[in-house]
Figure (tube, rainbow over the protein chains, first blue to last red):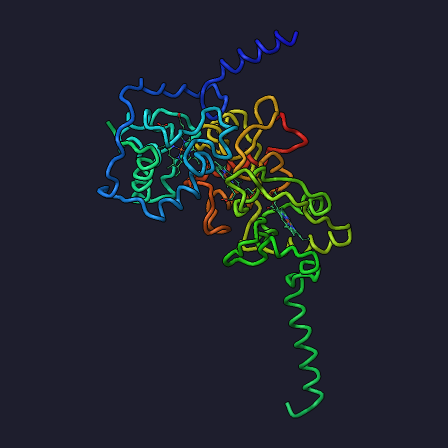
Length: 148
Length: 226
């Protein structure tokens, strides 16, 4: 009987659309692209147009760490409750497949706007463009990677 | 003012004027006695480091009186991860000392005081109609999908079970706890209450604002299934 329950529970979990809520309207976010090259060498961040400042790090801690964790590992306090885990910003193998523009749009317009999970909110009205650019630089620092 | 009688009368008048105008607004000695102000702010301004309790200087705008009376006698956790100013907030290590408990007489006095603390210049009653079934579906999708609210706030799933993130205050009993007028103002302009919060800023149109408010107000512990 326990076994049957587990199987049913498993089926239900499997059938849940990947998203922030179990609504039928939710589309499954695009699967991450196939990984390829090994970790890229750490880039020269100093040369970025929008450098990482103390303010950038503070912004990340204040807003992003709730989900992405204080060190960007995707293990913030909300993480256990989300149907799609927050992206691990220290993992190069995914982030190097994404352009800076893509990361900018994901932050500014939210997960849905780039075909990913809605649990990633839009920060368009909270953060100005320069701050978002500097957050992209910070994520590049965390993953020690650049777009391929 | 050379007439001593005048002087006396003016004095009496002054005393009445001062106590009268301060009246309900004067912090009762109870606030100091119970040290509520070591954890809570009763006036806006910069927060002290140790003040890791929610701001109360707009308590009269925010809370329903009945809920407040109950909370002061039977405090409950609302923010599963603690307040955002709690030093352990991001680490999942909220402070866990028990909240002070007031007796019924203290509660009456404290509730009257808290309900007198307001920042909204005016807050006309909202009188929102109940959500139609269609509107409810629309706003639930907004709450759980388009606006990611559920990623930070506990709400109910279709089976009436709690689900959602923990960095924001739980909304499970919002319908008993909060005043709809305040929820509406919070969603419209949270900066009126907190200069900087960890919740993203949104720009809702008037209809969405009202529907979101109504949706939040429909969350109660007594009727989680709806």
